[in-house]
Amino acid sequence: MIKNILVAIGDTDYEKNAFEYAGQLAVLLGTHLSCVFFQDSSHGGNADVAATVLRRTEAECSLYDFLDYHVEAVAGNPRQMICEQAHSADLVVVGLPEDIRKRKLKLIQNQIDDVLQHITRPIIVVHEQCTLLRKILAVHHGDTYSDHALGLVAEIGELTKAGILGLALSSTQPEATQIKQQMEAYLKYYDVQTDFLTARGFTVANILENAEENDCDLIALSASHHGRLYELVFQSTTQTVVKLANRAVLVTR
Image (tube, rainbow, N blue to C red; front, side, top):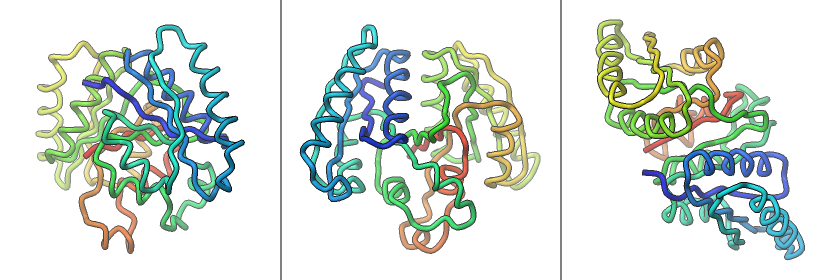
């Protein structure tokens, strides 16, 4: 169960958007919201910036009805500290600069890559124009990691009343159909509206096109398990979806 959501706050537009997304989600899920400002050299170590961000966040949190929250600043490299602080949370929310998506094929190694490779908790990466949940695309390609993603999506969908579109992906149509049937069997015990699709290939195009065509607000999929050396050289499907999606992406271990 989700009891605590950690959100990385700050003074940029994408960090403000991540806070708004996390705040609304925390209210819908009835969870605690931990708002953390990760202060490092990119902020010049400026105490005034931290004070301003904390003060603004406190004021905005107070506007939410029935929201249990706390606000704090943590010094250190955000790439490391987000992962360390995540141990106290069930779900992490971070924002992503819009220019990452606009680079498209020039997907150079970025802070989000380090976080995705090291974080041990589920994480939602929020793009600047994201809206809150109406429909979730749950991607499953037949492994236990996809099962983890589906379990979290089922909980979120039931509590937020968001619909779930299960996308079963495999190299062959019979395998994709079998995965679809397994998803149907799992989700029938949850009070959620569901639909299911199949497609051949765990590809970026299959995931992004189905999310777009079916108006899904959140894409949920499992993290890559290629290993750090591979991902320093190549972009995994998950990393690329995170960067190119024009909607929020939930990544689980």
